[in-house]
Image 1 (cartoon, rainbow, N blue to C red):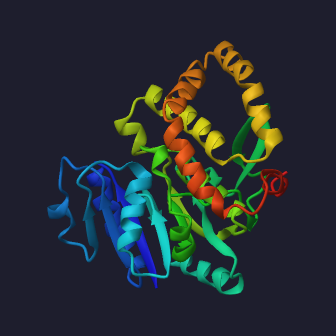
Image 2 (image 1 turned 90 degrees about the horizontal axis):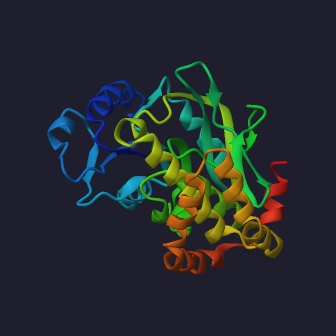
Length: 297
């Protein structure tokens, strides 16, 4: 069985509207809505739906909300849907065939049709000037992908929980799905993109409503640094990151991206917590960073 987890934060009107569209396609799954706004219950709004509602007592951010939903899930597989994702069919069920064929598969991610007509969903990661960076893949053909999108993917729940799920270090948002899939790759699992499973998704429609652009960018830079400090284990890459850190701070400063350095300071303030998470999660790592990066050249 598939358990569908929909994290929600404040954007209740869109959540209700999209649930009315999506639930007919989710009738064969367990649907769990996680309300991550402790200041306002949405129990009244959810009464019309046949779903399980989890209401967090404190704001946990995207990672914490996903993990809270997964803890309640009964299914063997967990499908993550953003509250602003629209289904047009039950094509997500095709992902189960990939899991049947590949026992090493961690997740299957979908093709997303954005409101402007652009399609995304397949991603790559690469090393550039002391930093791990990411971008959309050149092609959208089915195949391996660097990470499974946190708003439109299906995960093997046992593997998800073995890797401790999404990391709350990245709260409130960004890099959680990249981090989780990267840890899965390092643990020897695989992540697959299926272009035949299609959804509609308006990226950042929730985040952009409730957070300033400065907050969003600062958080993105902070979480990039957290990712680097926590996950990179190849000695030469670690050396490259620290060696070029001042250069990168200056580079971004002159690009008028001064929040890069601020993001590093925000990350460094959490260095003790990052070290603890790194120590705990590294026990699953069996592949080198360079081996993983070579898959997406």
